[in-house]
Length: 135
Image (cartoon, rainbow, N blue to C red; front, top):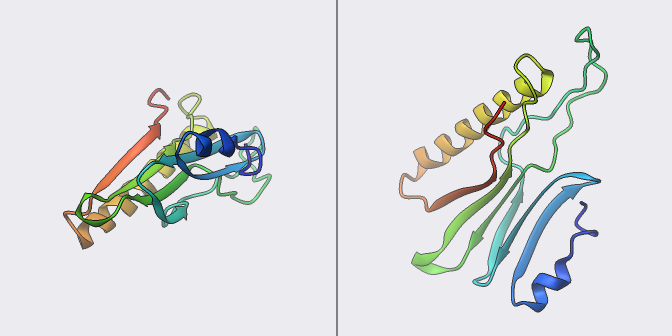
């Protein structure tokens, strides 16, 4: 759902701060926190978009970056942690364009995380969400 459609009030009334990102009916990520939310980032560096292709592999649309990654710093001081809410693409089946997109997405995520941890090895980081581990 879009941020305007997200049931933010329910969570805020329960004492949570909310950050969310979403597009239309699919793909959305959110982070809820009772210790504060700062430095919200939609998407990660190098996050690929999905290109629609026809049955012959001809490009039907330019790559669109979907709402699949939302990062934020939760808490403050030495107890703060950087959290990423992730919605990994469903690969559908081997050979499907979505499967290739999933592998590209995971490769880009690995590169972004490796670069960040290379800069600061003790960077407090949590990657969570729907990993869609089957194809």
